[in-house]
Length: 197
Image 1 (spheres, rainbow, N blue to C red):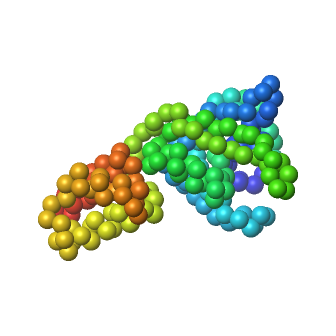
Image 2 (cartoon, rainbow, N blue to C red):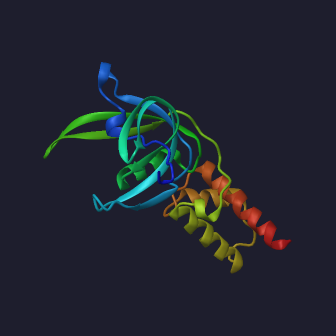
Image 3 (cartoon, one colour):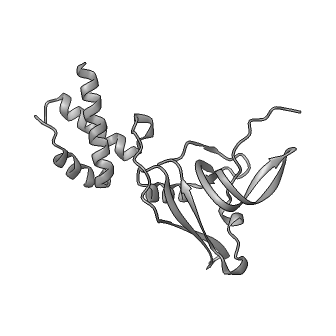
């Protein structure tokens, strides 16, 4: 028997949420503030983003002897392979936080090419603040951190106050929430203190 790496079971939004008994929603917890891996599907030639989640009583899919199996009423860790569009939605709903509880709603809508699945995500729990590291930052967060560090290095700003930092973070092109900006401020100040030692 080959020793394949066992992944958590896969939660598939269009298959895991049925319309049985009028149910078209499910709650789950998104464990990380952003995807933990990404790549390109050879079969569909499009990008995917892997998100770790926790589900309770959900239908998920695993592998047994190389074949996909359905697991009913599963509780525990699972993963979602998100498309680019869903990845953006998950990034918006987590807003830089770990362990965010969400309500996913699945609906069938009519489009120009016929019916299609529409998924929406609503945050129903605040989550926890992750300890930031440069690898965990979004593109706009990295830009903000880089820009501020450059201004400090060039002595363009004599003292970096939290209020000025938050105000800058909330404006374009960054558009970062106040809570996340306060976390990033502590991250930058912590790095400054480490470099002074």
